[in-house]
Length: 83
Length: 416
Image (cartoon, each protein chain N blue to C red):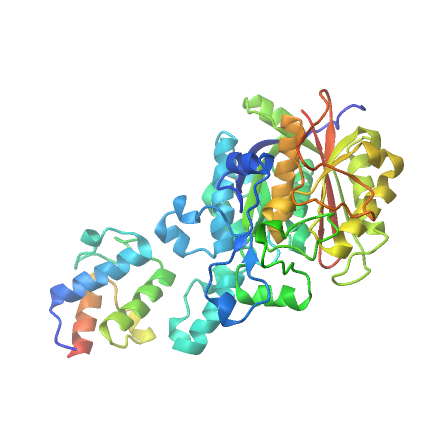
């Protein structure tokens, strides 16, 4: 896959979050916390992770998911995994 | 008639999504118009698996007309239908303002989240363990719909899920009455839901030779009491009612449809699937339903029969009614509404309780459709051709629901 910009990853992730939670894509911003700001529970988070794996063609190990506290953490991890 | 029970339990809200209507009003209108909800199934899998049955009574209105996309995604269709019906019933009851600890939920299902179970099994085999949906278990569990309704209403008095095959929906209403009478709740939301439009359950019913195979005439396939009947028609949907004591309903100024004044619940211990041909267990349930209401068989003017359109089942129920009520059976107008709705399995008893309530409320016994050649082995006064007016004044009716496993439930509905 061609290298994706951080912006493209953010937009892709926002679509996945919208699909799972109904949250407006515009509310999915880099500094937002998945649990505190977006009110995403652990079951929804797992669905988002698996859908992100499929969309971006990366692997996000279960151990890593707990470190993805903010949208920026997730975008950063996906960008790193794509390199 | 004798005086009412001291603590009368009344019905103040109705909700349904069925093969003939997306709401109770639409469903009742269709029933009075004699509309069949049976159609040829549009699913590819009918041909893929060469199912011998090519029709069913599918839900009339998509739950997405009512539910949001995200909430629907987190529920099995059984949960979606249950929530749609519960939302309508609760609104119809005037959105009662009640302490959460005094609101109960009893929602039955025959099979539960069978679509989720089988779809997620496919996902596991085709895509691997990581693709299995994290909500698979809460979606497939039979109590999922009851829990979804409990969450929706914030109901905390207790949430229960009777699973007694095709008696589940009626059993739920019976247990809801118990729940109020025993003091555990002031208001209970009760009913049943079913969503088994999947090739596997259909194949299972086919293997039992339980389903009609009248593929050239789907609308004529569900024909209780007709000599040409050859099995039931699979239906789906949900039906929910709101129950409370009469005093509670009057205190909050609620409209009262009718009273659930008695119930009988028995089991056959005869055969895992076949009905007892003598109908001993079913007749005991009916007699108990009438006597626990403080009534006598002479008071019963209408029966919404279980009448699934199977060759043996319809006769067994007819025998059981005769056994229970003798010559008093002659003045009971019997309706077989599955001739229009098909068989909603775990939702059937709840939907038919609603139709019994409306029959008593509007004084109209619905006509059974597709009844062309009356089976001489049936000894009932079956309403057909046109719906029949029921008498004015204080009247009572019965709803019968029976299930594989030998479950018999009869509920007495009395005018209010």
